Structure formats: structure tokens, C-alpha cells
Length: 285
Ligand SMILES: [Zn+2]
Ligand SMILES: [Zn+2]
Image 1 (cartoon, rainbow, N blue to C red):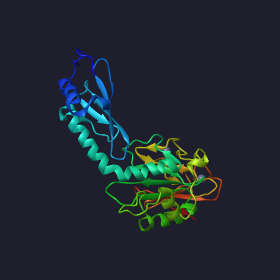
Image 2: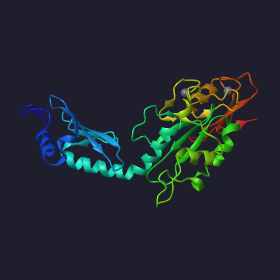
Image 3: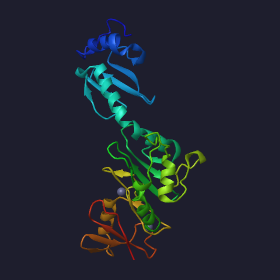
Image 4: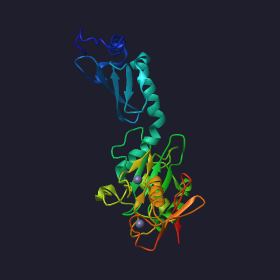
């Protein structure tokens, strides 16, 4: 319980929230309360025994949490905010089961420190290819897109489209036996995936754009991959277009550029990039 007289000068909701801790929430779940009464951290355990944190910021008059990305005004009340967060946990439970299963067994490259609000994972599927796995509470089937050398990932992306015919959630549902995310993906892709417990960390996989050397630019991953399997360097679409337009031997036909990869230009492979957003470059032979 906070020391009396430590009332914050910042928030008119301080007294109300302390009273809620006394009467409804209970001090057992209050993990910390800073001495000046400006911040407070409350633990919330959901129905699946996952522990979440709720942050009360009296200085900014906001609630935030590790559950979602919203900032909510303190006028909502702590008890009511916690009930809203519990409801959100209930809605997200199956989705988090899938992501927890994936994080525990597969080699996740991005995000490096996933938050509960992160619903996609970039996973290593081999030493030269990655897959973007995205799950949503609104959709029963996750999305899966494989990135890597075109000759390798082309057939895999065709198989990834069949995911909806194979996918079974880890919990199974309706009393049925579930299937782990790894087993699902191995069935879909017809390949054995690198396992986290075998020490594979994916550190030799190239993820950064070969031009700007960063992973994401304006939320866009470096997903344009050189079609030469011995190079397989990834680039951002925009970086590659900028590069190709500076080269004299680049040819443009309608909305497609044809040019050489910035890395393996000595190899007689050419590289095309479509200007339309969301289109993946196709090899030009
Ligand atoms: Zn780039
Ligand atoms: Zn290349």
C-alpha cells in the first residue's frame, strides 16, 4: 500500500485508483508503486495463466499494458480497465497459443523481442530462406509467405497456399487433438524446419537489405531476393529501384525493371523488379 501523504500532484485519479486497489482490485497484484506516486505496475494473470503487466501513469493520466498498444485515460478506472484487458486476453488466447508454440520451437528472426501485440514472425526455414508467418484472431488460418532464392521458394509458396487444407491449431478445439505449429508448417512445406532446441539461430541468414543494410524501411522488409541461388541477397523494393535506375544497362519495360543484381553482377543472371507494390520480383532469363 502506498505511504499516506504520497498523493501525486499530477492526477486527480490517484485517490480513486488507490481506493480501487483497497476495495476491488487488491494490493496483491500490485507489483510496484513508485515512492512519488507517479507510476504503478499491476500484474494481470489471464485464463491461460499468462502474466501481463498493466502500467498506471499518473503523470500522463494513462493506462498502458503489455497486452495491446492502446493508451487509455485513467478516468476509465483501474478495475474496468483490467476487465477490458482480461476480455482482450480471452479473445487473443488461441492466437497467443499459436505464437507461443512457434516461439518455443522454431527459429524466430524478427521481431527480436516479440510483444503480445506482434502477430507476425519471420522464421528461418533453411540457411537461405525465411518465411513470414502471420496469425490473426479474425482468421482461422495463418498466412505464410516464403522469401529466398526464386528457384527454391517458388514451389514452397505454391505449397504455402495449401496451408488452409492442412492447418490444425495447437489446441485442436472441440476436444480434438491439436498439432504443433512446427508440425503444421513441416507438413505444408514438405520439409524439416530448423529447430530451436538444436541450436540453430539463423545468424547466417541474410535479412538486411544489401543496399541500405537495414531490415525494415517504412514497415517493408527486404523481400526482393536475388534469383541467383549462390547470391540470394535480399533488397528493399525501393532501394533496388533506385539502384537499377542509376545503371546504364538497366532496361525498363512498362512497369518492370530489368537489371543486374548489385551483388553478383558478374554472374549472367538478370534481375527484374515490378513497380507495383506487393508484387514479388520474378526472374528474367
Ligand atoms: Zn534497403
Ligand atoms: Zn545477386
